[in-house]
Length: 86
Image (cartoon, rainbow, N blue to C red; front, top):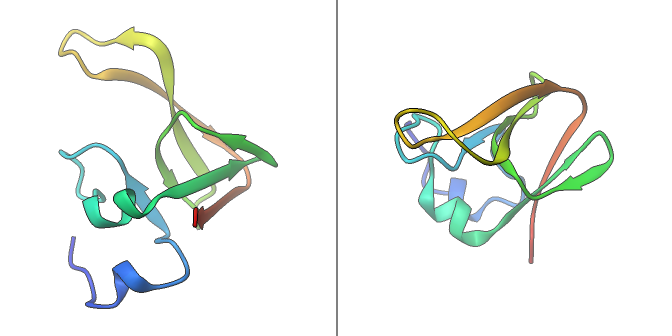
């Protein structure tokens, strides 16, 4: 992922972000700053990846792992609002 020098300091979170280091949309600096996700009007804490423009989130299924040890996720569509937690 190519990033602009001011992306980490912008007041608007990125359109697409993942907390999986293997993803092209992973950005450790932004995740360390703290990003909150509101999906369909409800604050979600189990979001693995999101895309605001396409309107979807990947939610981790509690305690479930695939055969490679990665958390199992489900993709749901709806209104996504991302914001920085201050």
